Image (cartoon, rainbow, N blue to C red; front, side):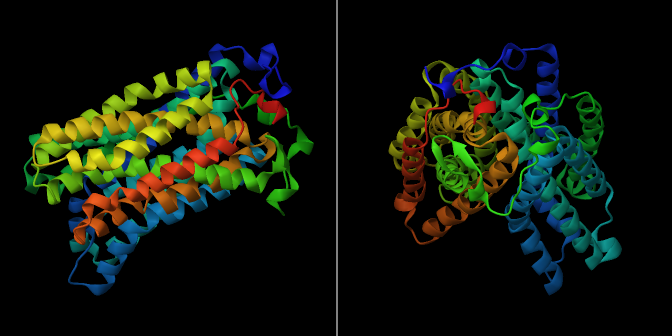
Length: 440
């Protein structure tokens, strides 16, 4: 057994109550952040009507920028900035800061005056709030992908790390379920008047609970072992060499970008775009597509820790290969399988999301096992956020472009190509199951 595959010392690798409590506190905060992020998407039409005026060119411009750009431009910036901070002053401090920002922005959205009340300033304020949300969200994602694998026992790092991605599915499922309940309980007029604010009011209250729980989180042992002299420098990423194997850190950054590309493109295709495609292109009922999406993502939620645990037994590479090969083979046939009948989307989306879960489950553990502790969060913040922004955020728009050109049958090639890139990247990256993170 190689040095990289040895388990660490008992005080690092044993599963302790404090670690489990920290895991729970971190996950609750992430679940909340993804719930708030998804709630904005669920109620986007009502929010747009409340804060923007399409007859006002300036407001319309802000609306376009706020909806399409903020989420995928500011999140990478937040990942980079907060990642560097987390590598300097600790993971816990950043996770406390991001939850505070998300709580404040939820309160602001829930209480903000509308366009009718203050005019263009409503659009401006909402845009600023979304910038803050995206910035905090990027920092939260980068730090969580570093923190949870660091506090996990090496033998269970795949399972623990998969819980990071569970928060993505979990927050989305809660938001869409709440959206369905609100749409059934209230009229469209009531939702437009005040009902769309309910998720943000609930999110603000939940944030206080998450903040209290995070106060009692422990700092990562791996970060604390760096000591005062362990703070990294950022003049050049290639100055620090990873032992996976002795290659410049920037090479690992590029490989992680490639690894994430297939996962994030497939994820956004089958969780964000597919319902729109089914409704607008295939004529599926809105309620049918809506609840099928909830069911499929719930199945993905259940599958995530199972894939993570499997990777702890057979290795990261076989599970990630399974995702990349299966998704590349199934993407186009499953897209073509969907028609106006909800059961067709039920089959296609559920199978696809379960496959996506195989890749998503391993992102956190693999990224943590590739990068050195002193640059772990900043490297993840850059590689992960950039890949999600470039490949995940563009997937729905690329699909929509192909569909508008009556080329739906080949639109899945985008995901197929990126899954091949994931496969190639994983072929180059080493097997990291059971690695001692202190030796990275």
